[in-house]
Every structure is written in structure tokens, then in C-alpha cells.
Length: 120
Image (cartoon, rainbow, N blue to C red; front, side):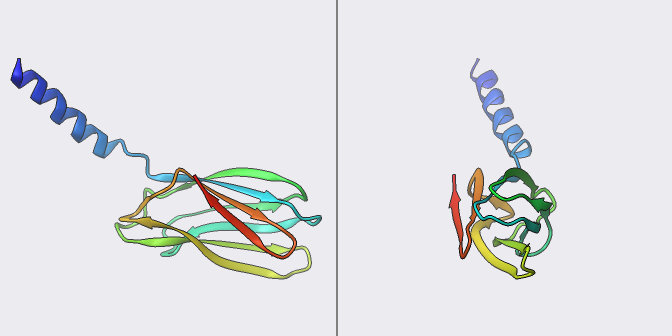
């Protein structure tokens, strides 16, 4: 009986290592009165990225950043986008370690003159 319990515990530990979700949800919210173009979120090593070509005024979209290809290193996320006025934006946010996200979701709220960042 003890061997069976030990076998089950070891099996659960091994399977949890292989079944770990290696990605993060990205929510983008546009609180401006203009369309935001070419919104892209990447890892700092450019091993993973996700994008949406257009985010309408007052729009919201949720994307998934698959980090299965990210090498086991530490880094952050980089948000890129272009406003209708052709102004380009780039900034880094958050943190991941050993190629795995520390959060379940990143939320970027794009406002007229700033970008707010929250994580869950």
C-alpha cells in the first residue's frame, strides 16, 4: 500500500512538470479615441510574440502569448504599437523567470498619453 501511494505521488509530480502551462494571456484595452495599429507583445529575447493588427477606439482584445519556445532564462515583456498619428511606442513590462511567466495575465490599458500595466 505504501508503494502504491509513493508511486502515485511520484507520478503526479512528474506529470505536473510536463503539463505546466507555458504561456500567458495578454489583455489589451484601448481607452483612446483613435485606432491603435500593429500591437505586438514579445518576450525580451524575441523567442515568443503575439500581435493584433488593429485595436479599435474603446476596444478590447485578449491574446495568448505561447512561451513554449522561450529558453530557460529570465526576462520581461515588451509592448510595441503605433498610434494613428504614426507615433510609435515601445516599453518593457513585467517579468518571467526560467522561461515561465510569474503571472496568469498581463493587462495593458492604452490611454491618450500613457500605458497602464496590471497583472493577475
